[in-house]
Amino acid sequence: MNQKAEKKQKSHDAILASAAALLRERGIKASSVQDVMKGAGLTVGGFYGHFDSKEQLFAETIRTTASALWIRLMNSAKGKSARERVRSVIGPYLSRTHRDHPEAGCLLPSAAPEVAREGEPYRSALSTELGQFVSSLEGVLGPGSGRREEAVGLVALMYGALSLSRAVDGTPLSDEFLRAAKALADRVVAEDESGPTAGSES
Image 1 (tube, rainbow, N blue to C red):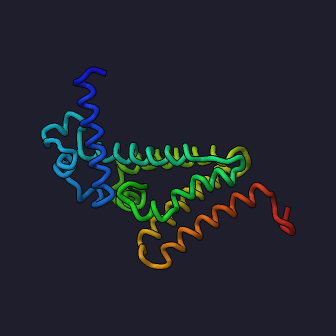
Image 2 (image 1 turned 45 degrees about the horizontal axis):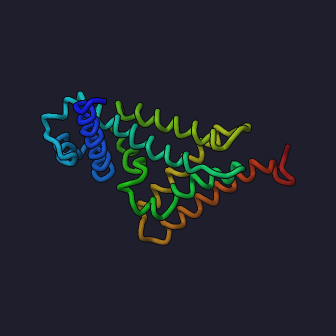
Image 3 (image 1 turned 180 degrees about the vertical axis):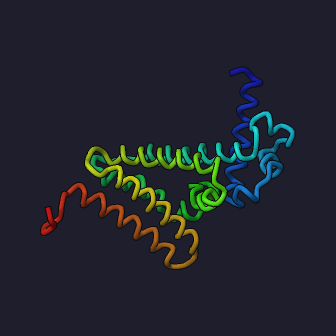
């Protein structure tokens, strides 16, 4: 990569980082191109050398920011059993540290409600990322029947618990949401590994 291309890539990355910060803080609608470029330390005039529109910018922001977090979580997956591997992924996600630092964490709690209201192109971007989340978590779970359904349920559990925990931050219920979600995920995977419980129907 030559110097000019490298400089453009750095500017591109700075714009995405600024957009991600604003998305978490204010949302898409309340963030202007001018705000994004100011946060990136760049002039507004340079925006269209990187993106065709604000919509394209935030769609790419959703894709890149969401995937970056998930890749880190997947890389943290450790353990010989599905239960251990899932714990190593869900633990950091449903932690107090992640809850208390939304500016550097998962953008789903901030982005999902607005994506539902605004629709395309954000809906497709988020759907693609969520589909990849599910597929990668399914891989962490390992082979077995019903793994896809488990992965979908665990992603929903993670997002829901984090969102509610942040919404009531500062109350005892906030920590309860995190603890209960981790315990429930643990039980789901543990039951799957051990097979049907005694007395259950075949």
